Image (cartoon, rainbow, N blue to C red; front, side, top):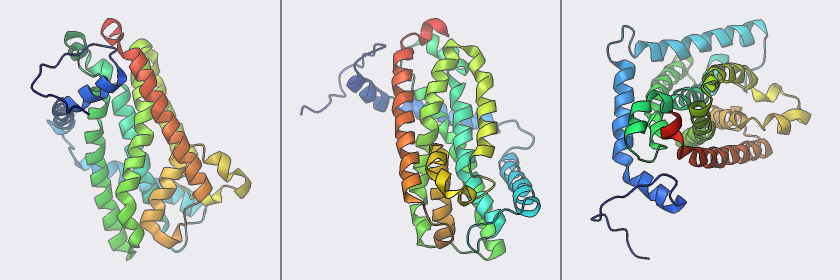
Length: 279
């Protein structure tokens, strides 16, 4: 195969061939990093609370869920793990998912001036929002480490696989995020649906409780929610043998993640050529 000649001038056209589009997307990786750094700067520049909010939000959510589901509802934890650690292990992937979905879905409208002036692979814009979500995830991870030290709970060898499940959580978010970003360009009222979906999803996903409380006959159906497999995977990595992974349910969740990712990318590509006119 003939190697790609980077010395030739780059010519981009909206709606180009799929193979060329992905090559162009890779060549614009520097733009992606610039936009990502801009989003991080805007997020934390000239703020009163600053990064402290990234600590406070997940910690307070963990406290509320531990009190409501653990102390009041008296739902069981997984194995011998403290309930607070089990909740936080589920809160980590959910926060990452919801942050990417929320930030990426409105990113095209927020960058309307850039889209209307020059052509580049528009997928760069929603993908650039992942950086902010990853920084918040890193902050939350440090809180989890503090909790585990506080309770004297040590992870097993499964913790080495945690980066794999971080990638799965990102893939689970990117599919619906790029689809929603394309829909919001055409139908602006879609932006009101995203906060509602994330709020409902927080309670129907096994964040504040273990997925093991779902009756066995409903486990496979419950796993159609892609975040069930991702959250269970996180808990398996963090809690080890206290949280065995339910194989069939995990495979169903991963299949849904792949379907949503492909569907989101195809929808985005079909709508992309009209962004400059609609924005």
